[in-house]
Image 1 (tube, one colour):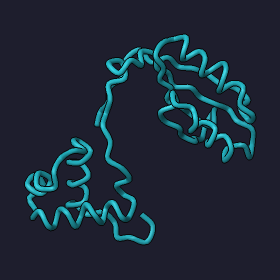
Image 2 (cartoon, rainbow, N blue to C red; image 1 turned 90 degrees about the vertical axis):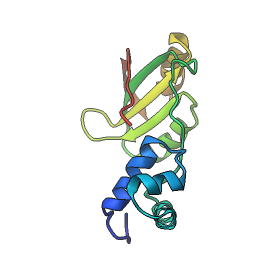
Image 3 (cartoon, helix red, strand yellow; image 1 turned 120 degrees about the horizontal axis):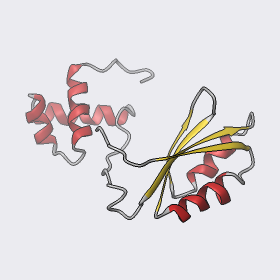
Image 4 (cartoon, one colour; image 1 turned 180 degrees about the vertical axis):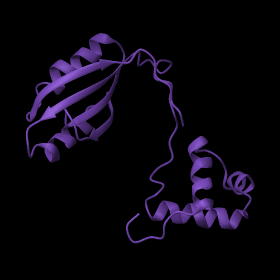
Length: 148
C-alpha cells in the first residue's frame, strides 16, 4: 500500500471476513469484528479506495460449472516480451490466473477448460504459438481445493 498507513488488526479482521464471504453485509462485518456499522463502512471504503480490496467476487466450483480439465502451465518467455504477452494471455478466456515468477520458468498460468480437448487446444494452438513463448510445461490438476 504505497502512501497509506499499514493495516491494523481491525483492517485484517475485516479483510478476513470479506475473504470468507464477499457478500457479507456491512452490518454483519461490523458485528463479527465488534465495531460499529459506520466504522466498518468507513474502513471498507478506505480499504477499497486505497486498492487493498480490489473487487468482490464469487468462488465457482470449476467442475460443477462445466470446466472439467484444469492445469497449471508454465512458460519460458523471451526477454522483453512480457508486456505484450500478458495482454495476449488476458484475452484467452480459459486462462484464469497469470503470474510472472522467478525461477526455472517465467510465467505460470491456471488454465481451465471444458475437457481435455479444450485444454489441448489452448496449450498447443494458442499458448505455444504466441510470439515470445519459448517453452511450455503442463501440470494437470487432479483435484484442487480452495483454502479461502
